[in-house]
Image 1 (cartoon, rainbow, N blue to C red):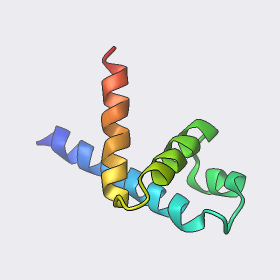
Image 2: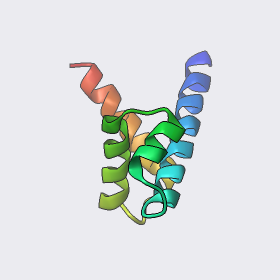
Image 3: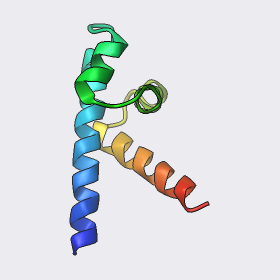
Image 4: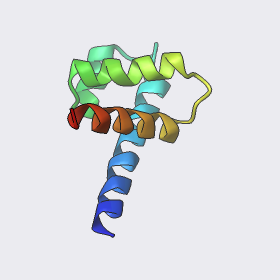
Length: 76
């Protein structure tokens, strides 16, 4: 139960970040968004790339895909 709650929090937090990156692309400088979200360049690029490669995918689905990818690489 706690694991599911923690996973939900991660997805929710990352979904918000994906939404902010998507909504500010071309409006704000990338560095401004990075500072605003307190993320590093690598995280920003990962989110940005997923948005560019999957423009019709919902923010929550992109967040889940990023977390799945991170989980898969951390098990190696």
